[in-house]
Image 1 (cartoon, rainbow, N blue to C red):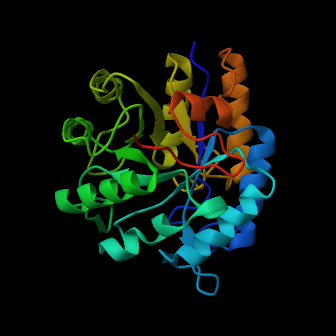
Image 2 (cartoon, rainbow, N blue to C red; image 1 turned 45 degrees about the horizontal axis):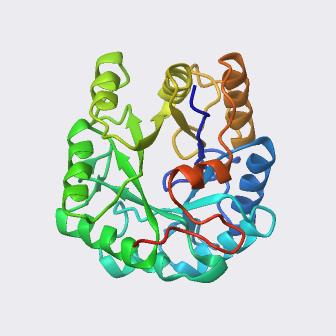
Length: 288
């Protein structure tokens, strides 16, 4: 069975210190949570930047640079994906700001949501032109898109981008289930989306909120990867009696993986399968 991809998502854009004291917000907090997860065993980290004073999400590359620098001091091989979200920012210059980082600060990947969608209280706007512009920017700078999909049509849009040679295999998809306006956490929705993935694709499954454990467990059982962290879920139990820490969530994934006979895919193994640079000073992918 394929080794288990653990895509660690420590912060996101929604959780605040008022919601849970465990969410890392400052650069140092995020670096430390990634460090602990790396020691436990993860494949990649999907990071969001927050303003140091207010805790509000920011697009600024200087904040990302601090996180990436801090992480790579102890994890020069770890695959780092930076958020290019359209939830709070919807101009190309802001969303692509982090993609201009170079050298040891260059991200390996950038998130690319493949359609607009509604969350509970806000929309994430991703016009076709914006998606293509972000993808072309990543391609020109040797950065691999992390394809985020919340419904089956988004998978097909990824195939469309392949046909246009805007993105190139091998591909990595994050399949997110349980958002109020998108695919739900049932076997039919999951099966349809998995069946529609193109060849030469790696994938991870995420569940929003209380659905995280169920969808992570399903993916581990069927041979997929997982996306796990406080970005998607701040509770440890479905009855919401205990606030989770990122460390506890990653530790639980390791317990489930061991029970299913799944070894964790190392960053180096992921890089090889994705035709990416080896890390240790060389990041992203060379597009020929």
